[in-house]
Image 1 (tube, one colour):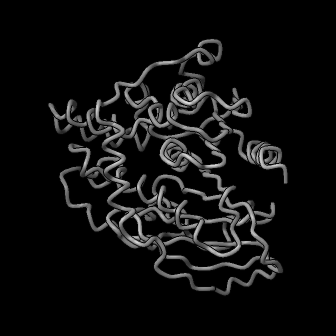
Image 2: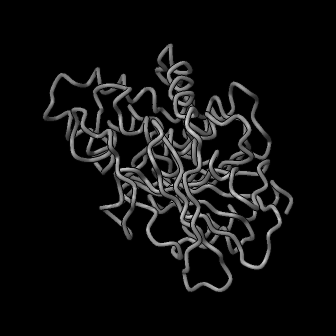
Image 3: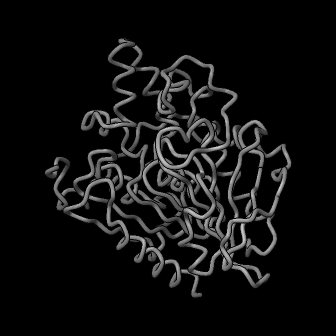
Length: 329
């Protein structure tokens, strides 16, 4: 796929202000306050994975509305000292899968929590274990359009709340350095990590690659690829619903979360990404920590000839090096 978005010379200066609802902060404060009324941990059960160098637990924590959300928690075997933790969020249509699938952060010496995506897990990977009991509002079958016509009904209000609660959950687990917790993810997971950075004031770091839900209006004009394509397909049938949909999506705009972030962040983007167009990632990066003052450690890496896979293993290597420097471990 040839480059189709703005050239890099323009992306580095791309700083659109989101059409932000006046009650954006009130909306999220109320949502998270309601979720925080529930004790975060439900259960923590050790599981046998066949891996001798990694210990893993099956964790259930309370997310949006106190709903149970599943996660895998892993850490290197043979020690109990408090470790920095990486909370990872999976991509669109994926669940938490199997506990041996994602070992990078554990092998780097960190504790690792991989959150399940409620109501997802049936499109890619090895499945999930968290239903979404609030998915009855009007909208299409895909997560990107469930409850799209009203902000309080939207799937991503629930998923973002789960992601914030995952950070609270990992801080309650044994052997975690609560002052050094990072949020990480690619695609949908990158969008969730960015939202967490904007909603958790004491997050220690954010690792954001090819983020979904950034520069949403422009992305809907540029691409028909899923997940954005699910939204445009829905609006092509439900003509006249655009205003309601855009109002809902404004509460999930990654640029708004980025402006409120405090933690140092590491971004990655493929300039030929037709799934999550690069202008969205740059819009978020260029506004990151705007309201709190940008941390000099925040950086972005662009891959001119890569698409949604971004820098792939090269990007992961850069994340590992950056996080080690940031945390000085």
